[in-house]
Figure 1 (cartoon, rainbow, N blue to C red):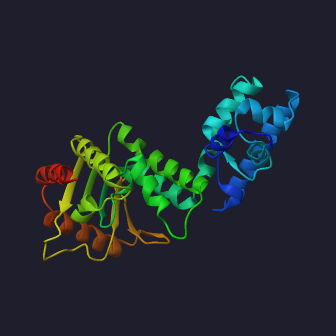
Figure 2 (cartoon, rainbow, N blue to C red):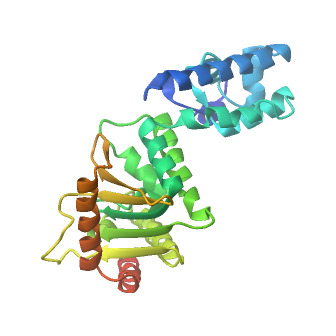
Figure 3 (cartoon, one colour):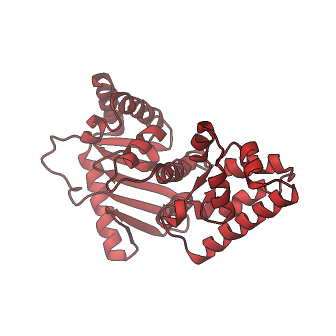
Length: 291
């Protein structure tokens, strides 16, 4: 393909969705096909062969081909660079909004939408830090250890999606966020000791925000209402509530009033059984000192 190793490494960060590995709904496939066609038209109008364009972009020729043929979804930085290289005056960069929703699996898009609209979120996590609390390197470590293994491109895509959800911390007005984390999540060195250390430091920063309360559920509790597993409760401005029950293959959305009542009751008891937010910050500081 006539591209050096640097171009190959760059290619790994230039696009998502390798050969539709995750699958896309027809409406999003159409968007990616249209964007790929436009990129090809702009390249040809500039008089650049694919190899020449690849060299100027710093990506592999194979990646350029896959983006233009809609087999790969271009990332925002790819579109920004293509706009600059092709002198499109912002017209290519403007397509970022069109492909943004197609970049992530439907499950992630739906969750991000719910979290983005919620005015109050309560979440209980029992085997790793909640996604909204994760650092990028901690999230990457989680995805890299999945079995069956994800490809490098898949991991990049999933990490990007998870990090995008953290934009809710910048919302104004800020939503009320409460988290209950099992003690074991503070001890398990996902990604290694330094990754865990930075994760705990991040937890302390987040836990000191005015709109966030983090609680720790000590392992030595002999009464525990969260033994059924992870759960999440989201409340919205119009007074409605949605529950989320997490599983390995699907997140079960709960809207039935009786089931919601059960989830809310369970979460409120878990909060009562856990350490207080102030006690929890002290506990996290001690866990950090032990790493």
